[in-house]
Length: 73
Image: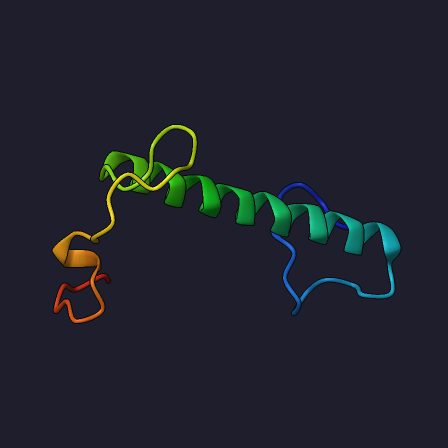
């Protein structure tokens, strides 16, 4: 059974344990939600998206364009 002290991964989750897999899915959904919220926050901060999720401007800032040489690491 999973504990609250470790993150479950495909490498350490017991896929035959329904309770553990349910917790694994919950954990991954929380992580995905946090990543999505961070992306939305950044888009709002950069003025690309408004508070209602609508696109504010049509062109991307230079560092977000496909031809950008910006280091994202």
